Amino acid sequence: MNRKHFLLITLAALAGGSIPPFAKLALETFDPFTLVFFRFLAASVVIYFFMPKHELSWKHLLQLKWVGIIGALNPIFIFLALPHIQANIVTLFYAIIPGMGVAYLWFQKRDKATPQQLLGFVLGLIGVAIISLHTVTSKDGGNPWLGILFASVAVVSFFIYGIMSKEHQRSEKVSGVALAFYFSVITTVVSFPIAVYQTVQQPWFGQIALIPLLAMLYLGFIGTGAQYLFYQRSLKVMEAAQANIFIYLQPIVTVILAAFLVGEAITWEIFIGGVIVLFGARLALSERKQKPIAPAEP
Image (cartoon, rainbow, N blue to C red; front, side):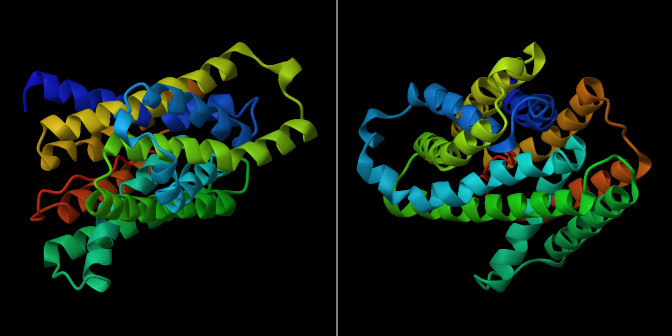
């Protein structure tokens, strides 16, 4: 891996890993659906300028509507989870996705999994269980059970979105940039009615603080729009196994930024659980065909 390739995947991990802590800051002013709406509106604008012109059509939008709707559940439920659990926990939940992929191929597609891959899936579950147990026994405010439930729904929806998007890429030859664009557009549309309702119920226009506003703008333009572009570019110039380093870099970025920006403690339970989850992801990704994974972006 040369320096340019490493820089690409590092930028993608920095952008993706910064989403949970910056979302925590933005949620101090904006309701979850309002934040989702502005985030993906900004991302749609960014990605539009990099869209292949031949893929800009209503036909593609209609073909990808269910992919976008399932994908939209991911950021919506993550933003619903963040008021109840720490930001550093959210990203560690996503590290179980490689193990989920192994289990899916084994049970649904009847692809033979190695004992090492299955062990990786089991370790991922154990790591998440340790983190969840710590979360529900801590006194950080909010409803931890609700936060874990929302985060779990977000991870599952993102996993399903990844499967559906890959099928569309194979069957309809849709580019990764186009998938990111239509996903962003559909998420913007889906979140708009509830964002309007939340704004009417609790107007935020006259009470916008500078930091939440800057955090919201960052989430849209950098955390989402730029992240997808960095990651898609890295997939074009790197081997999939190299691009998968994203999975290991992103949680580290989140943990560091969450401690620095919102003062979240890195406890022994989170550290041990995180190490087990990431080691499980490493085993789950071993001895697999070199296929790229979708970015584990909340």
